[in-house]
Image (tube, rainbow, N blue to C red; front, side, top):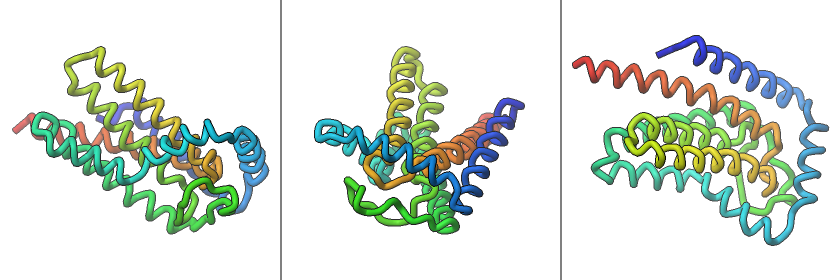
Length: 208
């Protein structure tokens, strides 16, 4: 259902993404990116890196695919979680890859990379895809999980994961801060639309 609140979320998040995208295309925000990156890089150490690198890998496409496969193979989660999650995850991945190919922003210099990462930089695919996929999983959990305490715990953990994955992309040196902000803002709009479409489809199924 498209409520005024959801419409506002979509409009505002797309507006934020557009502002960031226009400035990225015009090579603005460079000072902002530089200041944030230098501060983040100054905090690097072996202990922190040993924690953050696995966090950033948890946002890889392989991890999202693994979650989707598990949810589909497990009979009790197949209908309410598996298939909806898989469709949204696939749609999100295709979307961010297409947008990356439009902007073609180079990644930060490979000298600052802590991991190997190819492709373009804007928007951050990890940031967008994890916000969409894990955010949609939060929605599904709160919609279908009868254990409300478990639902709340999982929602908090997944929310923390979304934030940490986005921030980790700057720390490991493969994204600019504006890439992450762009990924998050576009992801919020995409997630909201995905929820609206899901509810319409489920509503029609219930009417049959």
